[in-house]
Image (cartoon, rainbow, N blue to C red; front, side):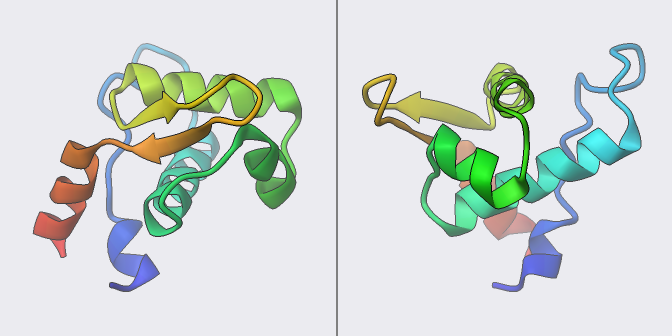
Length: 96
């Protein structure tokens, strides 16, 4: 599956219109979500390094994706990973 197909995914439900998240943040969230899907999960440290984010920004992004029910956190706080929920993966497969 091509990366471009994944980038059509909308993280806007509950983000932006009255929540104050701008277009650049939405794009970053989409890219992070695609990366999580394609790599079967990612740790917070990997997010910080891969996307060159501050720790607090990475935490805030993952919290938002968790609240929108796109990802879940599995494992211990220090060694765990964020993974895409099954419904997120299925939705992506249907869109392709």
